[in-house]
Length: 221
Ligand code: 4GN
Image (cartoon, rainbow, N blue to C red; front, side, top):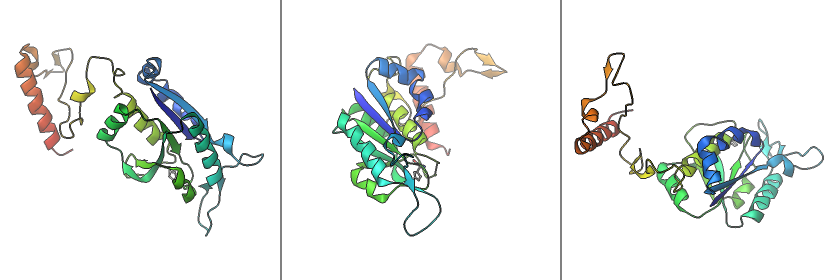
């Protein structure tokens, strides 16, 4: 069971994603457990303040160190050995092989989702890894955190549900993309399903799929 805790100012953003069918199944099967932690609960003073202006001047606000420290330490009380993951465009690019590693590991995770123009650099003393989903900036770390969670949870053994082992899928060997697929009808708007798929010849079908996968992975995207 992987325990995932998420520190965010917008916990409601996760409702749709964590309750979608795959994530729901994963929780039912006790493959994963989620806990959302509202950073606001650790804000300072009566106003529950979490942000302040940067020393040295500059536009915008930063998340203060203290509320983040309190929230992370609160999460660590439940999972003392959890890896603290900070979502940031400065982080290490997220890739499929890393998702596979996490799914196969017995580690727990605490995601820290930043907002505003950044955070007080001193929170990095509590962070085990900085992760980015790509070279672009979003208004918060929530969407990147959801992306990572989704990519990991579907790979936990038993979650995807028998039919396709995740290991034969796109990207898993780092070079082949998935082959083209078709379902009924045989002809749609004059477009035909490749004949080989209708033959029932499994060896030929496997050969065709392999060649198609290689073709896709070597062509420009
Ligand atoms: C992560 C966080 C993009 C990514 C983010 C990414 C929130 N944007 N590429 N935005 O994975 C400044 C403070 C921007 C938090 C951060």
